Picture: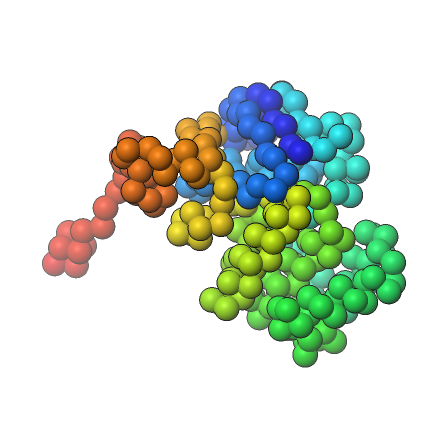
Length: 252
C-alpha cells in the first residue's frame, strides 16, 4: 500500500531529518516506527500524509504518487499527529460536523459512526462542550476518532496514546488490531516499547535519520540474541553512548 524509496529531507535551517530511507508498508500489517526524539519519525509521517515536501526519492501511497497526488492521498489517509492543533472554540459536535463535510460522509452514516465512537471512547457527555474545555485525554480521543471516522485505507499514528488512560489504551489497541485485520495499512509511532512489541507485526527503528532495523516481529524474535524490543532499543542506544543517572553525583 505504501512504497518509500530513497527519500531524504533537510529543513531550511540545515537540520537533516531523514537520509535516503526506504521501506514498504503492507495492508493488514501494523508497522511500528521507533526512534529517539529527533530521529525523523514525525517528519516521515508528515511526508507520507502529503503535509510535507521532501527533497529526493519517491513515495507512493496506494495508487497515488507524492507530492503530485497529495489531495488524493489525504482522502484515503487518517492521521493522528504528535502535536495536534484542534479548534478549541468549537464544540465536539461542531468539530465532527466539520470533519463530516471535508470528508464527504453521508449524514446517516456520520450519525451512526459518531454515536458508536462516542460510546466506545466515552465522550458522549462531552459532545456539546467546547473542545478547549476537554481534558488532554478527551481531546486525544476526539482526535483519534476524527482520523478514522471516514474509514481510511491508510492510518498514520504519531504518538497516539498521549494523555490516554489505561482502559482507553486497551480499547485503542483492540481497535487498531481489528482495523489492520480488515486490510488497513497501519504505521504506528510510539515511545511505549512494550505496547509497540505487542501490537506491531513489523518494526522499523530509525536512528539519526537512517533506518537501523526493518524486520518482521517473527524475524526479530527468531534472532538468537533477541530478548525484548526494549533490550534491543537499549543496545542501539548504548552504541550512541547512552547516559545513566547517578544519584550520588547529583545529590550527595
